Image (cartoon, rainbow over all chains, first blue to last red; front, side):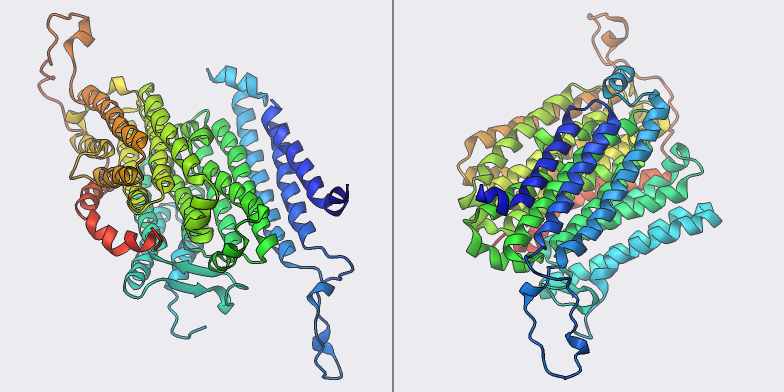
Length: 127
Length: 506
């Protein structure tokens, strides 16, 4: 139980991931597959973002540079959340949006060819 | 940052990237300039990679710090012998593919060259980026650039292409997400994304469960991207329906880059100790690869569509590379790396030749190739050379990589894999002789069912030579020549490049 509470962010992202994976594998509708893919991607993004968080930490903007006293302020890394995973995820979000865009364009093409987005019907028409 | 630091490593990637942005603009103004522009970009990129490769051979690995930020904080481009070899292969094959694409794209995608070439160059940018980068997350970004471009390029093919491309999107995204998750796990335990830095930190964490899981995610993600056997389902459809110029670019390069990343992860980042002794990856990888080889060859036998047959052969070829990686000894890994290079040329040549056949005859059916050697002697010649190389006939390059793979299997006392390798050679012999037989001969019984006179009838008296256009023929012949040259100079490639890429402990 302790493990569940202390690592709840990991469990949530794993649950989301499995929801996405299930949708991608089991759903016949291609749009639902795409939504599953998105859930899958965002679960990983949430996972990354949550790893940067720390208890009692603040946004990583260092004010020491503006100190009037000129004295050197010793920075404690534990006072600031880790910004790197967030920055990485900024890129990953862009990648995710681009993937979704490409996939939607493909769905449009598929719909224009087969007039349906159900996988089983498309497979029947492809024969 | 040193002031005398050469800018060549970054130019390899930046030139195609910049030109891919310029191409649509220029193409909007003058469409016929697109293809020359792409060829220029790739030629410049090839020159830079030759320059870098020369420096790597002379002085050892080259590092380039983006924006002057030193690793492990900044992104580092690190080109060692393996990357240098890969950049050479990538730029050379993509240059050939660009020259080749001109006529076939004019036919298959009239009026849309600018956007095609934009995505075409983006794909090459992504592939080159994967190979030169020394940063795990940067690799993910380039992997996705390459994959997204590949989805788009495959989708513009014939009917059915969009659906197979969508499947590729789903599988490819799962692969990329697994890779990203693996990177995340590694970052949690090490706090680093730089490959060289990671390889320093990881040995102390070898028994951490997080590292173990990260390794699993990274490998499975990459196996999806390189279409290793049970995860290959997206490949045959996508590569069959894609336009010929696209499959001629994607098929030789995409899977090879995946194989490169796998070698990087296993031997550069985690190190041989981890991936051989602590985790039984090698056992798993070799058995999966052996099945991949056999299934690929047998499935290829069942196909009548030339391109689909080649796609299944590609699955088998990926199996060869994975087998060499999994054997994890000096000869096996040498064979795997050599096979990455050789197979890029063989697949390029095969797909070029088949694309030219489709361009001229409009058919991909093996049984409709009759007397093609009369109409297209040079294309068929190139096809035969590449086919013989896949089978593994000595002066051609396919022989040498198979030779090293078999030596590796013998060194590792893995006799079943020796049998698999030899059996697959026989299977590829059947595969290609079926094509050659149908293209060069016409058995009389096939015509009227008369078995008494089963002999090769004399072909029609005169048949005009009707070759593919020169801009398609030249790349095909260059690739065929490349197969011969690579075969003859295998020892040279191994002694200058590959032996430095194999981990020292082997």
